[in-house]
Image 1 (spheres, rainbow, N blue to C red):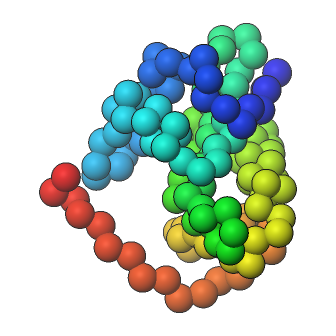
Image 2: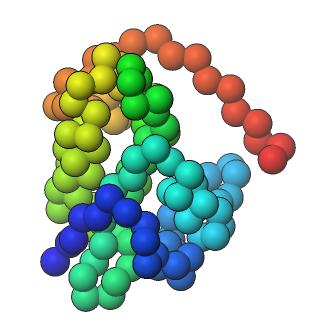
Length: 131
């Protein structure tokens, strides 16, 4: 069974293995934990049998007007079980009253995010692949 939590209290780097595969900039489990701790909001999905994190979403926000969702990931072996939907729904609930919630995604994910009221728009991004 999957348990959702909005805190990383009790989560160690060892519970965050398998994420960021294929990224040009690798993220260690220790860095991943720092990312989650430094986020304005986070929701994690935990496999209650193993205690491992199998999915997560985080947001950066001023908690007044806007929020940005930089990361959503579910481990490959846990996909197609509704976990990503559960993560997004729980995070969106936290930001119900905000004017704007933004994210940037690949084209193949547009349909997924549209289910939550997101609309396609123009975005600008910059990546520093040297770090």
